[in-house]
Structure formats: C-alpha cells, structure tokens
Image (cartoon, rainbow, N blue to C red; front, top):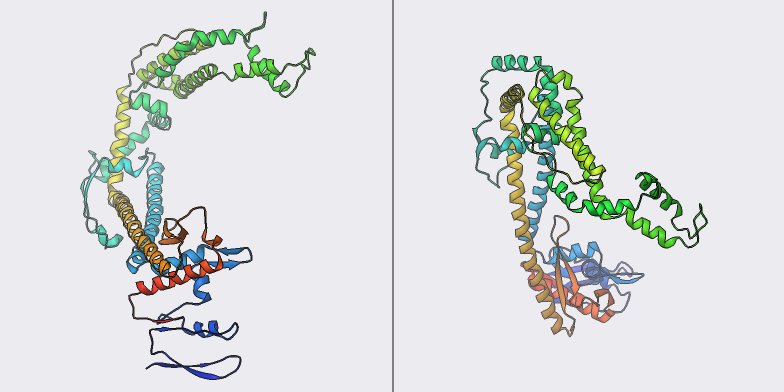
Length: 476
C-alpha cells in the first residue's frame, strides 16, 4: 500500500493519504485546499482532474467568458495524439528544415557557378534544371541516411557533351572565343532578350499573328468608333484632348467651357467610348508591335558594326522591321493588315559562336557537375519524401481525431451530456494539432453553460484515462 504525507501550507497540519485505489476523489468546501493538494500529483505517474486540467486542455475562462485558444488546442492535441503521430510530425519538421537549408545551399552553389562562368566571359545555363535535362545519373535514395551518406549512392553516367578534353584545349578555345568580341557582344544581346532569342536561336516567329487576325475582324468597328472623336476639321488626335476634357469634367454637372447644363450623360457616353474594349484591343496590338520593333533595334542600331559579320541576321531583322512598320501604319490608319511571310535566316558564324560557347560551358560545368547535380537531385528526393510523410501524417492524425471524438461522445452520453462533439484536424504548422469543436457549427463550446462545459471537460479527462497505455493512478 502506497501512502503519501502532506502538510497543509496554511494550517501546517500533517496528514496521510492512502493510494490503494485506482481512483481517488477529494472533496471539500471552497478554499479547503483541494486544488493545492491535487497539484502535488501533477506528474507523469498520475492523471489529475482539476481546474488546471480544464484550463490547460479543454477551455479557459477570460473576463469575456469561456474560450479556446492556441495553447489549449496544442495541449488537447498532446493528450490524444499517439507517439507515432508526434514522431512522424517531428520527422516532417526536420525534413522541412532540411528542405529550406538545401534550397538555400543550392541557390548559393548555382549563383557561385554562374558568377565563375560569367567572370571568364561565357553565357551560363539559366538554371540547374537546364543542366539536368542534358545529363544522366543513377541515384538510390535512402530516406534513413543523411546528405553525405546518400552521396555514395549517386553516380553520373553521362556528362554534358563537349569535344574539349583538356585544360590546354579549353584555354585555346577560350582564347579564340574571347578574340571575337563582336560576336560575343551580339550573343549577349540576343541571350538576354526573349524575342531576339526566339527569333535567332530558335527560329520562331515573334509577331503574334492571332492578335493581328483578331484586330482584322474588328477593324471596321474600330474605325466607326474613332470617327466619333473627329469633330469638324479637328484631327484624329482630338481623342487625347477629349480624354483630358472628360477628366476635368468628372463629377461636374455643367460645362466649364460653354456653360451647357446637365452634361453628366454626355460625360458618361465619352467615358464608355474611351474605355471601349475594341480600342483596348487596338492599343494592345500597337504596344506588341512597338515592343518587337524596340527589340529588333537592339541589334539594328549597330547594323554598321554587324553587317559584314552577320549579314543574314541583319537582313532578317531589317526585313522584319519593315514588316512591323507596315503593320503599325495599317493599325494607325485603321486598315486591314495583310500578314507577310518572311524567312528567318542566320549566319554560320553566329551558329559557330553559339556552339563554341556551349562547348566551353559544358567542359567548365562538367568539372563541377557532381556537386551541383547531386545537391539538387537530393533536394528533389527530400521534397518528394517530405510530401509523402506529410500525407501519411495527416492520415494518421485524422484517425486519431476521429477516435478521440468517438471516445469523448461515448463518455459524454454516460455523463448525461448530450451535445455532439467533433475533433477537427488542423493542418497549420509542422506539428500535428487536433481541435475540440461543437458538431453544431452555430453553437461554439464557449456558448455552453458552465455545467455543460464541466461535463465536457470530465468526458475529455475520462477519455484520456481510457486511452492511456501506462498503468496510471488517477486522482479526482
């Protein structure tokens, strides 16, 4: 028989308490020391039901009434979630931290690699995925091993293709590449501009013919609409003047120029015309064509420098520039655009310069490929494994949530508490969390009467007792 001695802190009297029963009830008047005594049992060896248990795990009472906060939810979760769920959540938390660190590490690695490539004058790959698309590797990922142990399971089986096989060949090829500053400069201009890159490297038409055809279908309606902007002998540019006039008279009822009364309806009419979607389609096409023209001018403004080196490129861009001018003229005059065919032709010297950059880049990248590729591949595997762990964790937590709700509701009925309770799974954060809720969405637990909340708290306590795997002495 286990006996525990206590001393009343107020009266200083000593007394003994026998723990020969699985459940002990302590009762007495207010202020007699029940809570003080019960707190002596709040260890892993006992389950204690007192106001502390209620406030900590079920609900709290504030000046505004009963409520449930984040801490209460977290404590309630820890009562019912099994060790397996918590261990799985800790694994997810660890993997999330590893994922963030790998992402930071890989960005730093690739940034360092790009800086090295750019420093010697080459055009680097845009991303590590561009590199991985061109190589082959073998990797047997082991979720139980760390970053360095897994590296032993990674093997490159195919590197980036290059005819350069030594440092001597690389230096010689680099010397030739650097001597042609004009081609190098041209390559950089093309590389950093999406339209030029598509046109010259990929031989893709950069003019949106669908947008032109859409314009052609509505050009007559646009013409009629814009006629309303031309008053008497005023030029078509009066549209801009009208726009300013509308802005000045917005919210006014009389015209400040001619004194006309009640001009609100006319202002609304002009607003609708200025905001018409047909005009927006036209403006969008003009903007697109001007953007293409500006991109072509990046090279054409230096045509004197390039014409003897890359005459086919200059000819292609000049031809396309002329076509764009015709298109813009048609749009300004509200005429149908006849779509012109043109040939995209590039010079062999440009292609050779492109290939030389790639040969040099591939050789240089291959020297650092193992570290670059492994770190990224490992990150991808971690993210895939993390996704599965999160899914498994949520499934397991949902099982615990349903079991907890069923247990609390069964015990509630025995206690005469007829409110149905549900336990929701909260997915915020890495650690698992389940929250006590009323089945009736219109009635929150905080709206229950004091007696109902006490019965609910007691049901939670007994439910925890029945779920305990340890042999515990339970104290009430």
